[in-house]
Image (cartoon, rainbow, N blue to C red; front, side, top):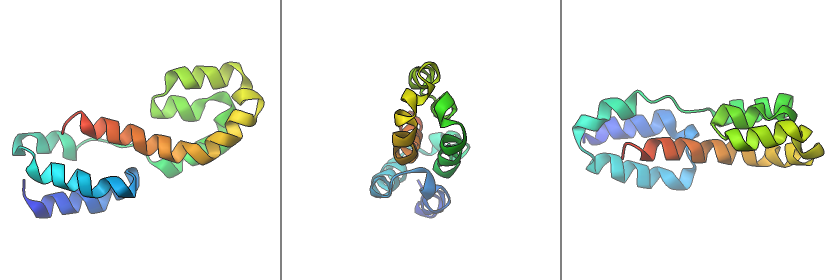
Length: 111
C-alpha cells in the first residue's frame, strides 16, 4: 500500500481511534493488499464527540449506546432509565472510548 495514502487516511480519521492505536493501524494498512483499500477508505466511522453530546442529552434513554451499536446496553439503559441516572453519568466518561473501540472493531474487519 502507498504510504502517502495511508498517512492521509490516518490524518483524516485519527479522531475516530485511540491515539495509541494509530501506529498499529498505519503499519497494518501499509502491509495490506491494495484491493481492500477502496472498502477501508469508504467506511463511515462514528464520531466520539457526537456520541458524547448524544449521551449528555439522551443518555438516560440509551440512545448513545444504540447509536454506536451496543444494542443490549442500550436496552438495559432504556429499561432502567440509565441505571437510575448513575449509568448515564458514568457513560459521559466512557462513551467516547467505547465509540473509538467500535470504530477499531469495524476497521479490523477489513485488515
